[in-house]
Image (cartoon, rainbow, N blue to C red; front, side):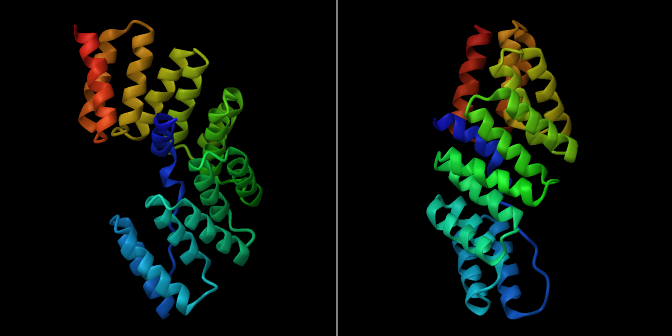
Length: 245
């Protein structure tokens, strides 16, 4: 299931949203410093700052959310869940806390709890496009592709500039064997984000299924220029070599 998680991360890793705390008090100062470290990918340093913020203000839900995000990025999923639990304890209507905890449960392949959390996030905030996208990915993972498409549609309706649900919708149509529909949605994802390597890669695969090898080669070339992941690069290079023989 590794490759599925990799693409889920491509569509889902940013589900862990950073909240912006404002103000001049010391806890918020440490929080904001932690956010800066987190944006730079310095997760251990970020955690140190969130620890200080929480020590100064134990009732600071944003600090728990962001520390959970940092733990998620370090692969410490159970510690992340503990922080999301605390944020929810402090604010039972915190949609982002449910959404982020759902992401952690997804990575632990606990799809039932992930679904419950995304449902709760949507219950708390019915305009939360990200939660619809993420619940759609759970449906996708459970092979309920039509239900997934319905959630991706809702995410797109709520945020037209959100590339992930277009890409995910393409993935769902591909699983249903509707490759022209898949291509259309990969293209919409690329229209929103011209550097979306996975969308080029999977659009290429759809072109290959339809026998459009020239278009597939063009998309694979583009994906290769954008992709940094070694495994993805190897897969793309292999597909290119096969088409060019």
